[in-house]
Length: 211
Length: 211
Image 1 (cartoon, each protein chain N blue to C red):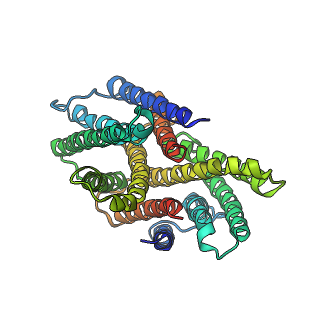
Image 2: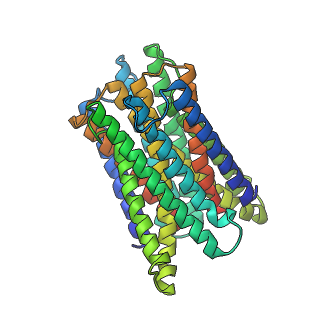
Image 3: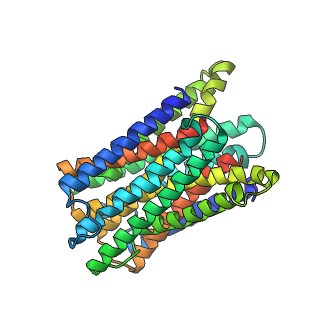
């Protein structure tokens, strides 16, 4: 299989994940509305934004050097911009879950999911800032860039691993709260969503090895 | 930081994870005994074996080319043998959870954790078999080996990512069943165990980039 085939599979599983997430949140759950009085509609902004930002766009940004036609410069610009949008969507998604907790008097940041998620978000912010300073503005000397690049790349891979863990633990946590029963339709839907998200991560990860 | 520093951190978090897991299972939970009449003691074999086999030993096997002094041949032997032990421990761990389900009439393989876990186990078995045939016995031609090696390596990285997801979702699932409350001591212990396991995965993953 070629590098293009691998990133093709990644796109496929990414789009499948979005579709499954939307079916889940709109059809099986309460719908999505940040300004609603129904706390659950506010909460549902969280999984969608976190996936769209922190997994889908980040994955696309990782693959940008390969999928965006030509010139390294353009690839870098897309890579940086997608990550910036990811950060903004991530902030919206985080605000949504805190608003939901506030509306229903639920404690913040006590579960393994939230610890992994918050940790990933903070490290991601640092990675973006550091990458921006070194590679874009003001930009470091060539020798420094060469030294930093492998670290930037390795950290990015690791952050994707962490983001995927955050997503999977989040789906598990929500399944627990909903008390989903074995083999129920919604249980299977959530599981398949988890699998497509995992496979998206797997193929984005592989696309780095075969760039 | 040097490659040695990274794998040093990986060993550290691996050992920390084992300690935290043992404190959890022996002190907070029911203890560990495959032959017990208490289903929970049987169940507790599962997290310990899966972590020891599928994460700790696999991680050590990935780092073996670096930590085992000299000769590629020796590194390969350690790499293969550790993975074989991992497979055996994994089988014991899986048997334990099926035995537990049987003892208490619980459905098998319906949660996202179990789907990820079973998927990882099967692919891992295939990866071991394929690696054994190509690199050890009967062993393929040099040209084939050169072609297969990057795929073997990329698949290995992806399997580690999947195994870490399986561990984290497993901890989330168990926290849900135990109905662990916010900021309880056991909640924090489980979360820290999840974090040390994640960090073990992170540093093993990075050690590959800086080999």
